Length: 351
Ligand code: W6P
Image (cartoon, rainbow, N blue to C red; front, side, top):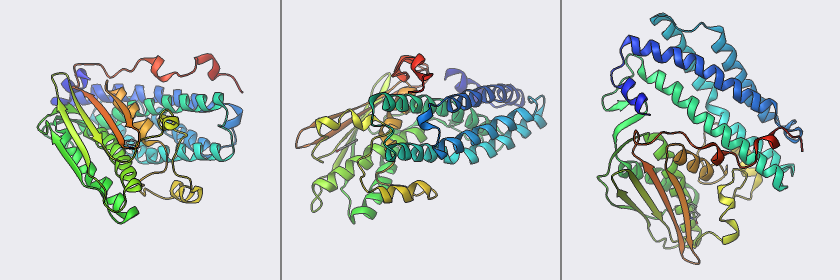
């Protein structure tokens, strides 16, 4: 992370070439690994069309990357830039396709066993982690190109990012979705160390806060549709980290669901047909549905050295705690044992 910050501050042609060479090599390797993981999916995933679609997206990217030579001069850098723009555009649907795959598996009753469910969770954790890495490499390269450089930013890192500002934007977004669904939305109050700032990826904070707030306003409306109590957001700014707490009065998460909400394959939305539509539509945002929101939020938090916890007070409400490390103080690497919920050898077995 420190290296990224140093490189990105003054993008000279030689820095661009150096980064481009690295990205060209590294992305091909990482796509190859993802293709390999999809190819060795067990038999019970074999007939799921969405997995094949995702594999084909990666295959095309891998082939195109291998088709152009490693950049040797500024023309090579431009060629790579054009390809990466194409790649980020085509990869936009991957998340939804994977959600569709999980939905299909669930409908076919393939993930009712503990072993299958663990396998799937593990596969998705690995895939999503790898996705953060490739996305970061791609976007870092793109943002270093002439015309894309912005003062106060290094790639997608904002040097003086204020979580409180992002909380306000995310609250606006979550309330808007809530109003569409329920005709009304609870107030969202932001207080505490609202001046706290850190070098971070605002896009990831926005995603995480959006998910936490969508859940909070939805629970609040379900519990108290007439006179919804406000959702409270409190910010804490420390020396090594910044924390955010989101409190709602939505009645809390039942104990038997407290583990399940972290699973990709869990969704509280029952109406299958509504989900079905959304999975095949273009970018329509949802208040609730895919089931990827919370697990992915925690993965993002952990990838950058932070974490998320949920706590419920029975019959009252839920508090979510989200910690962000000041970047550069820690490495973004996440220990592999976090990601591997089942031992690697089981990955090879067709169960
Ligand atoms: C709930 C369920 C939930 C998940 C995440 C954040 C807040 C809340 N509130 O009732």
